[in-house]
Each structure stands twice: as C-alpha cells, then as structure tokens.
Length: 171
Ligand code: FEO
Image 1 (cartoon, rainbow, N blue to C red):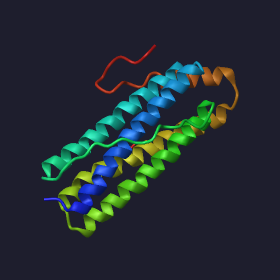
Image 2: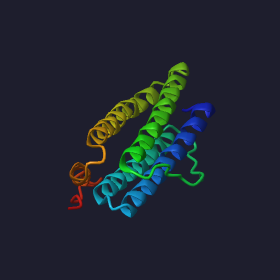
Image 3: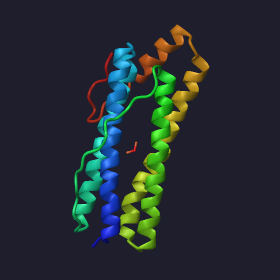
Image 4: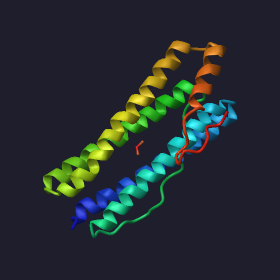
C-alpha cells in the first residue's frame, strides 16, 4: 500500500517527467531550427526517455495499489538561442528534477515505504548520470566556443546517440 501523501507526490513527479519530455522536445525543435540536427536528435531521444520515466512512475503507483493521475502542465519555454545556453537550461532543469527525486526519497524513507525507496533508487542513479552527461556536454561547448569546426563535430557526435528502442542514429 502507498500513503496518500506519497501517492500525490509521485503523481506530481509524473507531471514533471512529462513536462521534461515536452521541454526537451521543444529544445529539439529549437536545435533543428538553428541547423543543429545532431543536437536535435539527442534531445528527441532525451524526450523519449523522460516519457518512459513518467510511465515507470505511473506503473509503480498502480502496482503499489495507489491511484495514478495524468495531468496537464504549462507550455515549455526554451530560453537560449545557442547550443551552450540551451544545454545549460537542460542541466538546470535536471538539477530541479534531482531535488524532486531526493525529496520523494526522503518522504518514502520517513514513511518506511521500502518498496518505494527501492524503486526510487533507480531514479537517484539516473539523475547522477543525467547531470554528469549534461555537464560533460557543456564543458565541451565551453572549450569549443564559437569555433565552427568544433560545433560541427560536437553536433555530429550528439547525433550519434542511440535512440530509445535501439533505432539507428541520424547520420
Ligand atoms: Fe527523468 Fe531527466 O529526469
């Protein structure tokens, strides 16, 4: 069984994960519009992963005997106009998601809901990975600066990310 409080907070997290998916899809569209097709592919894959995160939480609530709710959210807003600032926004968003996961983890711990603690552990590890990935991309972008050749190369590398489900990356 799952407490109403934890159920409600997990439902909120479903919304945040779907919002993340929309935000990254909006970033994918932005990258495509400024001709960074590799970065666009990377963000589309990220958006797909976020959708899977949302469904993972939904399935956990259902399995735990709770009530999963799908709600709407505000329009995502992409704030930057270039690769670095948009990836910085993505990192900032991931840091917010990490805080949310940590909050959920402490809630589950306080309630001695060890099934939820165990479930949320996957998200704790995922957040470490997601922040580290975004930080590494930003670090490379800082070194590249405005160098056209460097930007071309990193876009190509970002486009090589394997899509969720193993589809061929965009060439
Ligand atoms: Fe599902 Fe990127 O947090």
